[in-house]
Length: 401
Image (cartoon, rainbow, N blue to C red; front, side):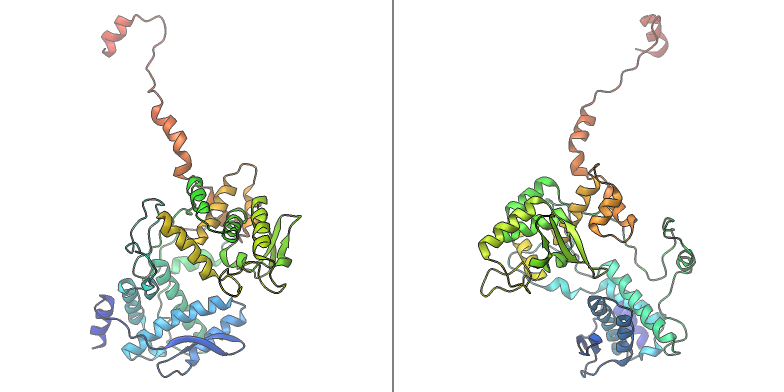
């Protein structure tokens, strides 16, 4: 019976019941907890998430791991298998279900006609998100489940063997690797999905000018100019306050996503010019409030989702599908392509932990090669010539006319 259910899950013929949830934590040291269908906290998951928080992970990371374990436990509850009795067969069923199931995050409705899932925008060349779970999401879920069982194995709990298969070649290759050496190539572990390596998607200059012209107020224009000139992440820039702006030094101070420390980031003079115009129009915020605020009703801090909606409205009008993170990619590509900036300087501005990450932005864009390609296509073919002194009639007789 269990085998039939596993097979049905892997073939997409049945779906998991949406029981349980990731709820706000009841204690200060745990921001999120996993609860079952009865609303009771799942103790083994809370212990693992608490260990992650002791390791100083971000609360958003804790939330992401909670949702990964929620999918896993929904599968176990559906199969009526205890978490400490799980085997590789259940992991295979989870992967099969994730490959066939529809991602509920794709079902959110917006005003206007949304493009079909997985379709490619002809103007930007970017594909829309497909209905199911992305390969990277499946691999992340496997890493979460593997870490969950590795944690409990230290205390003698759970199955004897981790149900998530690991790649021995990867473990051996990364065991004593120096950070100065290139990343070795190894085979993927069983059940791991193939994730294609894609070049960073930046916005061509003429499409960027079109997007910038689609902004309806000084606030949005200032935000977009800061995004493309500083390379700051969306959430980092939205948390900037008046005390974080160095007008004379043309710097803003942001709380970095990875290190969570306050770091300076340079921006263009145009960004500060638009910011000054925005503050002159809408007034200064309270000292304890971020600079960016809503413009309808009582002023409130501008959230990531509100700024995302601003970009969605511009996309609907222009027929594009740009995202906020594309602005960071655009800033990185522009800086990496500037011969006056070294790669190490670009790494410092973007606050990348590894230089290899910054090196990904050295790839050439096809859009920037238009003039060079036209010159290449119109270049005359090379003509064959022979050394002087030969009679052309003799050359013709030997090699043909």
